[in-house]
Length: 305
Image (cartoon, rainbow, N blue to C red):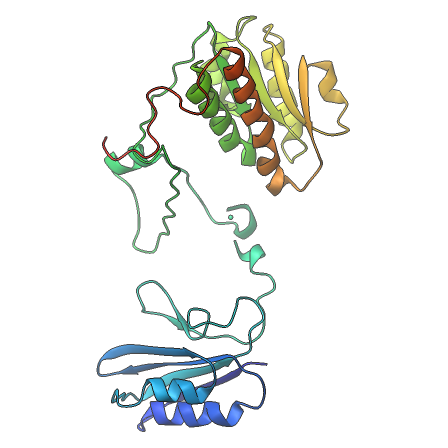
């Protein structure tokens, strides 16, 4: 087990923490650290190795403060290093945390579905230029892909001739967007990704026998809803290309072509579903004689708007 010690009072917490950690150091601890609040604010010191190395590294730094935390680590998750040593702080260094043992349920503490917290997804170029309703405690996660850094949202411009509609729900709506993007990038055929549940608000008016629909219909909590959306497209004579879970039989009744993927948990399906979509874009581009490795007009990194 890790060694944890804390102190608050009128004495110098640095000396108390170091001596206490040394007394707790009875086996193969691989790193140590202390965090102290004093006249200079929060001070954090960590070191790979024994407590003695930590003590040597801060000798002469004249550390004084009446409140502090100390920790010796025995590595379980993450290699022994200064970065992995405790204490840990938030990005603004206003919060200090140490803990003992393994946080085995760290995955269940994550994404909107698992922690029941609201989450919104936005496109960078839209987010940048609109008035955002962010509070000081909101978390913003920025995800950038090479070639999309300064991309802009073109809007709904589905082309009836030589156009594709990609539809998906829940975890796989972003994969519908990605699949349509890849087809556009390398085959020069217009395609749009759309949330299947919103088809009635525009795209359904353009669906006919000239509009191929790529439907991501793998096993999920919204599979029945997705199946109904595919029926809506099929009833308007669309050619249906479906991605389905291996062993699923009902999809055969409405899909013209089916790409099967192995069964997995719903959260992992996007990782598998993107593969046939990328291959579809690849072979269509190859059939059209397009330069797949160097698509026209695309830059690897976009640095101007």
